[in-house]
Length: 347
Ligand code: ATP
Ligand code: FE2
Image (cartoon, rainbow, N blue to C red; front, side):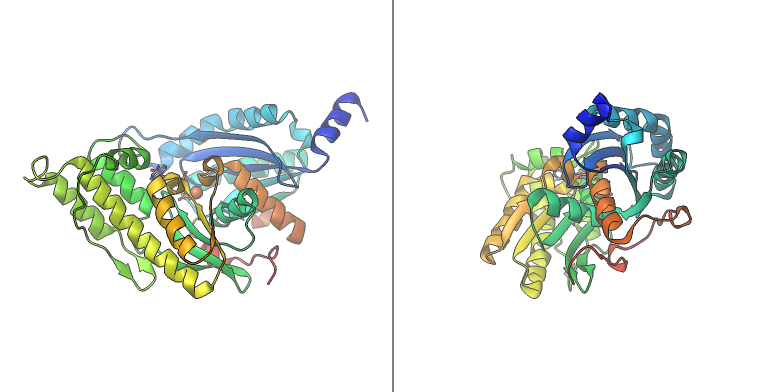
């Protein structure tokens, strides 16, 4: 063993995975070992000037930057591509033009360097990184982000979906409202801060259908309040932002609590970009306590999209089922999380 290789062995004492996230706004690369020690996490995020995400613009940014991000992640981890033992990439679900970039880069690296490759479901990855980082075993998970709103728990070898949005995802709804009042993307953190100044709660449509949620009526009603002649006289933007959050988060909390009672899980995990919101954290913490369940929020560095969560889920799949053949690595933009068996979990 030469000096460098020996140092490397001493540092990692393990196999190394490079994970690539490319489902939406973020092209992310994470490098970690098979025990879950993280060596680097580099993200490049597309931020639209105005409006939502345009898949073609996102694709162009990812195409222009992917090599720079891969190199930066390797350099921060202190290793070279030759020392990578596994490549994992986000194979599903997401925007097809964007998913294709991650798949293309991963297949290229895998074939060029003869490294095994594993495709990963992005939603499963949000849960698995939470289990790793928060050291929870079998949580009920509330996964809330720009593109997803899912209440899930492990049952019968799958991450079953107990509740989900019927229309807009929560993060997208808040971002769209923020855009409507001319706040730059992402609007979620700005709305959270503005809501802190509120003086009153104004009733808005609260729509829970069975275990599913609908945010479109709430979104429309909040926009109408901004356009109303009473805006700025009877209530402020802070009041509307606060009422929007309180209504939407109460709906999420109701469904999460019912799923918790139904499944009898003893741990609750909050993940996805919207997990950063302190008001939502407080509400979910409260119901967890009521049900004597342990409550954990995924560390924010790993709650939003990142390559580490893809890498970790790839490692779990590789250790139980091996790698994918290159013919099995085509993207699956619409794949649902509850269609995938999870062989690394106990039945
Ligand atoms: P996915 O592909 O899983 O749907 P995503 O592409 O939306 O994820 P994430 O990084 O998981 O990416 O989440 C981004 C979302 O999180 C945005 O909608 C953003 O506004 C929201 N967000 C971030 N911080 C906060 C906050 N403090 N309060 C509310 N929303 C927040
Ligand atoms: Fe995500």
